[in-house]
Length: 148
Image (cartoon, one colour):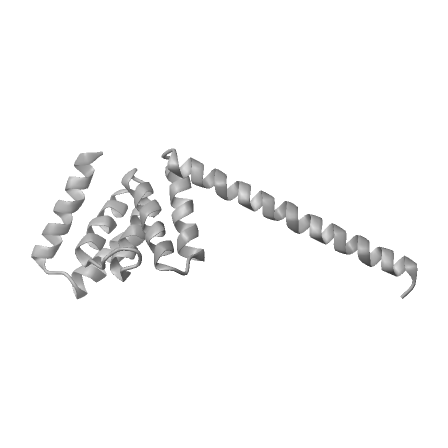
């Protein structure tokens, strides 16, 4: 290989390494900012952080963190977050499985305009819940609404 090609290859490698380092630093800074905003009570950041743990997590701790941050956003009335918390209760992802709690959170999401939550509620009603269970779920949702 001639000197010109070697210099070009070296330059390419240096530019690539610089790009990777800068991208990594930017990603770390973005993650730190997201965490800070979530901790300060920003529901959008809390939901994004929860989704990040859901999408990228592999451990039980990640699933627990996904539930924790998504629930924080849900408690602030974010319909999408309420829907995801309900799904976590359905599957037992990061939280003990409970169709009653899933129904409660789906009912809150439905009240906040998430139409898919209504469909999930119908499925839960048909397959898993008794009339008493539904009443308990609505009481749970009502207590939550009263706390806001």
